[in-house]
Length: 620
Image (cartoon, rainbow, N blue to C red):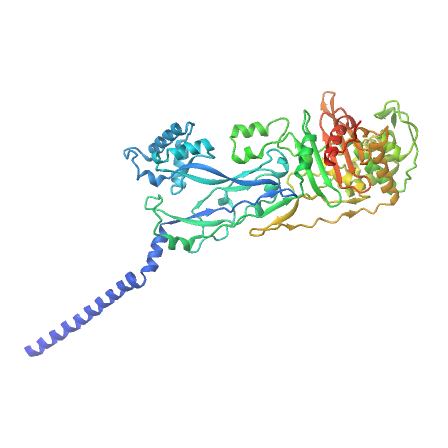
């Protein structure tokens, strides 16, 4: 090959190589241009996303009010003093100290300035740094006006501290209706099995959770899902060390990930605060007690009180373990709602059920019984009447109700049989839950037919002793059913809901009354007998009468219970319906460690009903 040919071939190879190099450079330049110019926004977003932390934000909890709009449970702003950890780097705090030491130093200075003892443990600091470092660290919760003002005066000295607002559940009436409303505590949304997506983008699960309020008892617990609303999401940007960064230039980017929370549903209860106060007064005293007031026409619970009570404000704000232990182990059981969770032998109140069972079985109200002061059980065993000298001969059913004769109802129970009595009791709501939208309701107890084998068993059951147990709520329902002529209501508490954004409550219709299909003889006899209890000169509940124009039907009861070693105490009962002709109220009162139903529960019922009817008491 000639030298010229070799030279030309080399030039060609060099040109081809240069073309490939040029094409490669163009490809690299084009790729860089695409990455840095055309796709710059995409990668900027991805870079920004890596430094973002999602924050779960709960919705505002719905309020609870009574039937007239008075607030029973609401929300108030709690001002908390918190340290913003990323600001510590920007302040004059000695950098030679470790971050925990610098936090302790700030807390010590703050304690002196606010004249209060603020303590933060090393464990608290370590937990916050490892789990929530981008968020403010609260060192003083619910600061009062004085401390808030002192901090405002000295704010310039604490650039690393800010005041944050934390919602707190608030009960304006304190202990009033505490067992019914319940209380709240701090929730833990991380434990929920599923969370609705709160954020756009590939990472939907929150990194941090703001404090959530969760119902722990009563209406707050049963209706928690409706009350707490829908959570939302917010975002914060952090640096490589995990601390919060300045967000002033990130408004557009952060808006992309923000999701507003929705407030919860407001609830309207059937309670009437005025009547609730009267019920609380009737329940309070030296004895444990409970009171229930219903509207027998629709089942509305107008009042429900249990004594002793507790203050839901203290529990909702958070108490120490020792304080909780003191409450939970208190012998008087202040956390127990005796109105729905306390079971008691109903005593003579149960005699109304025996009368209704006998009448529906065809036993006439004129059935005559002689009371010598005891009922013979055979084999030399007797069951005494409360009137030891006896009520005498010729008692009919209305008189037996009026004077609450044990002998009459032991005889009546024997004639109609326990099966009929038990069926009537169940039809009237005993031995089962009422369906009230409240937690911790118990069924009471009705012994099965097979458990009532001897004459003494039937006799005990016929006067509401032995294994028969009921709640005050069940006795109020019973009183209402008698007053309404054999029509049973289903008690209810929530009568309206107001969804977020709505101005008016949406009413919830009551459950229609259950007609038990009683004969006119049954309704007439039981109602007249209860009328005589209160209005007759010898009626066991005559002490409850407060006005001759407002006629009531009632029944008293006394039940013994054993404390062991031959020690016994009594439960005192009274139930009523009023006014007699057109009942608007049905009520029941139970008093523990009572003298008797008429003597202990009767005066309380008188005060309660006089107050309900606006103290229309006759002047002597």
